[in-house]
Image (cartoon, rainbow, N blue to C red; front, side, top):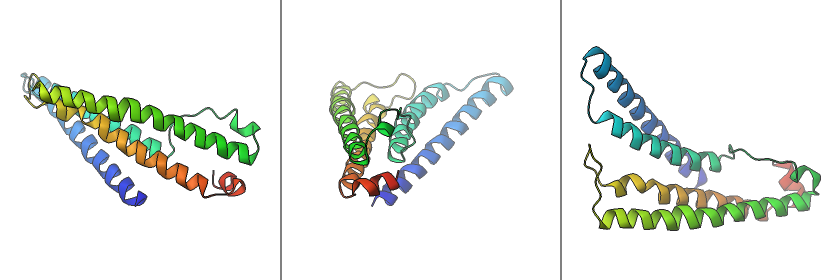
Length: 162
């Protein structure tokens, strides 16, 4: 299941990044070659960058590519390292549930209820903001999967699989 989620997320990121590149190239082309910049590309690039950033952060979290300071963990016993990893994943879970899932859902709800539209593209801002709860749910899935994996390992197995 995790491989499927990884693959879907990766290819979605590739598609969005490709679309972002095409959008920015079109903006540069219309501005400097045609002398009349396209009116929608700036806003589209901004929205695509928001989606790529949030989805990329979720993917990086799932691939363990995020930054971490591991000074404390190396000084602990294998059992202590395992407990610390579970604690860190739990703190991330709490943050993600509170800020991205709940807070992001409230933001999407209110922008949808008030019918807020973007200035140039006239798309509902709720669509743009929906990446917050989506990436939050993705990080939630990854962290719960990591906690389950850690709990099913002995301390020696955990250290071996780092």
